[in-house]
Amino acid sequence: MTSSARPLDNSNPTIVAPTAQSSSSHNFSKASQKTKLQRLWQEEGTEELDGFAVGSHAIAVEEDEVEDIDEQEVFDLLRSITDPEHPLTLEQLAVVSASQIKVSNKKGHERVLIEFTPTIPHCSMATLIGLTLRVRLLRALPPRYKVDIRITEGAHQSENAVNKQLNDKERVHAALENSHLLGVVEGCLATAHKRGGTIGV
Image 1 (cartoon, helix red, strand yellow):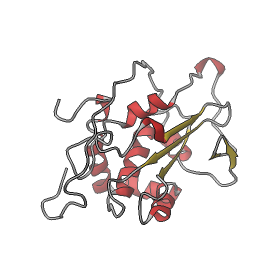
Image 2: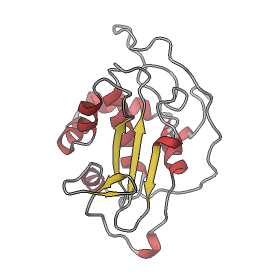
Image 3: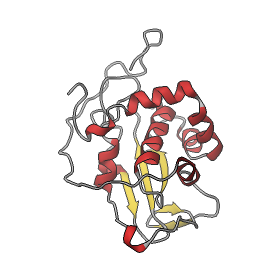
Image 4: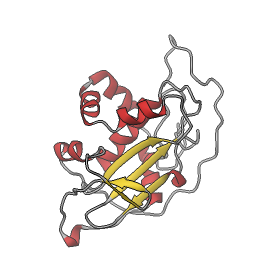
């Protein structure tokens, strides 16, 4: 997914071998688009839980509808997303890994924290990658989970600015309403269903 008019930020990225696919058979529920857009950013008035911030509100669900998820299952949702610049997955480029994901299943405070690592400190695609991760989880996770997406500390020269953009309600809305940007995101997500497969297979 490269543009011939624009030089690559990283023309020779390090590639890692994909790990084994999870055996999980979770069927993630689909909330309404409006509900999903309302839940996927950091809320004001958060508290610390297990090392990362959690919101003070959560969408109520019936007891028999609750099924916990874990880090590997979330990783399986993200690992085969295609990088915006290279015909490689985010797992192959070590942008995302299971170790960079934290999940809290505490009732009323369900939270997923994603940290991702751009291939180079000045990667201009960092915000786009983060937005793609958010859209993937927006569509796949049960509605009770709130998601926080961050760049791995020290991995990008504009880390704080990118993190703010990725967790800002208005900017996320605006991005998803931009048809061109959403088209690029959709291209990256076209391989997400492979869950550990390689591009072109």
